[in-house]
Image (cartoon, rainbow, N blue to C red; front, side, top):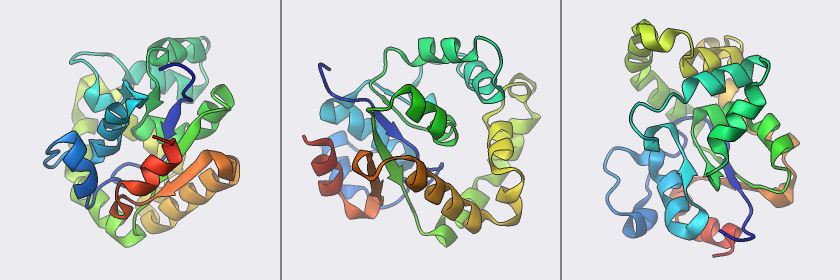
Length: 200
């Protein structure tokens, strides 16, 4: 990887869904897993390996370090840095909701905020809400559930004002991350803005 900076994707879940035809020409058919397409693209562009929960080895216990990190528990930062140390880019919901702490840890990183029309994002989240509720019912996830971390991050607003919450999250990112380190990106823009920003 050399001197390339870390790349941290801070868009909320399901903001990467959309027309990724120009990227899938490089990364292969991503089928319905379009939320993974940015992670796969970063791997292809030389910014891999990219950390994403769904790209981790089966059985990897990643939720506990993220949960502890979000709670500010003792040794949580060290455990999380040990988890992330071999990755050159990071994506997925736990990354997005911890963007401020990750910015402090990686102040020279390049950040990508994937965005989406708020109404379409709300529809997409609602479409998977039965899946999210099923996750909550699984005992093995209850203690370290990413879903519970989401709820804490959004302080209940996700259920009462989904569109307002994605707008608020995006605004928080824009306020915290310096403009020269942040690409605000919609998948529908295609490949070019991403390639230009990453200088590849």
